[in-house]
Amino acid sequence: MTEEALVARAVEGDVDAYATLAERYYGSCARIARRMLRNDADAEDVVQDTFLRAFRAIGRFERGREFRVWLFTILVNQCRTAATSRKRRQQRFSDDETALDRATDERPTGIVDETSAVAAAVDRLDPLLREAFLLKYVEGLEYAEMATVTGAGISALKMRVKRACDALRPMLEAIYHD
Amino acid sequence: MTDGDFERLYERAGAALRAPAPDEDAARDRLVKRIHAESLRSTTRRGNAFLPWWAALAAAAIAFAAGLGTGRATTSSRSSTAAPVASGAAADAAQRPIEFVFVAPAARNVSLVGDFNGWDASATPMRRTDGRTTWSVAVQLPAGRHVYAFVVDGDAWVADPQAPLAPEQWYGQRNSVVVVAASGDRRS
Image (cartoon, rainbow over all chains, first blue to last red; front, side, top):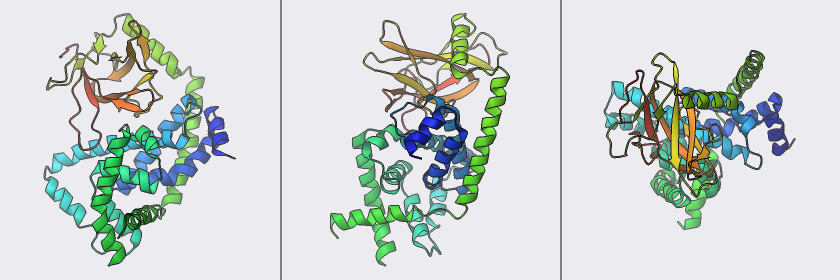
């Protein structure tokens, strides 16, 4: 069944159609959340919550919109909310951002596979740059779609992607050419 | 290396990150079970006269118009260091109808998004009022701090120009804050 047909059936209340869409997009949402939150357990909570919120709202989904973009919009904001509340929790225990950053920087030690090495490099990006890089190069969104998902303007997103690439370049060269 | 070489480097990195996590199938199964459980719960709620969203919204608007709640989210200038405090007259109510107002005469549609509706731009559409230049909506909010923004024409996220910005600028820069008081106090 085509995605358009699945979405139409889900909008009309077909739970199985929505579950099929959820299965189809689980992987994309999970990898965005894992990289944005840098914690697999938090990421799964956010992804599950995203799909349940979308399920409750699917009856109001506007025909003609792209389901993936609509879903990513909810996901990105759920990640932002989770990251913000987690940061607040962390601040109760440590206000030392340098220590937190250093802990992240130590993660590449012992990495043996390409995916983990690239993930560790991407994790070191500023969150907004990381978000832009993931949407562009991992999920393959167009800039107009990224603008809908993030609420940022296209020129700002192009700048974020460029800055992300500039920051990643030496790390990726080290991974792929050393 | 040329620009093309660098582009291939970034695309290769993106492809590497598309590898599925080892536990992804189990997590996907958990999600599908939760969706079916949620579906059953929704059916039960409907069977028990659970209000649809538009009826709940209408009830909130009616309660607001009747004077049960007088909160307005946009009561404070951005230069204020404190978030606006909106309050209802019924101090013991768990949730209060809070009105959000946004001036956007050229907009085709405006909706309210926030941590209270999952940042879902389709969840809380606003309605034109005041000679078609102003958009407003009343929503039920519990006491506490809420972060929100307006979505104009479906894709432009705009902070409330009359409310302070949320301090969490490291990720998510353009949201506003409203504080719903537990008592009848109101600060602006």
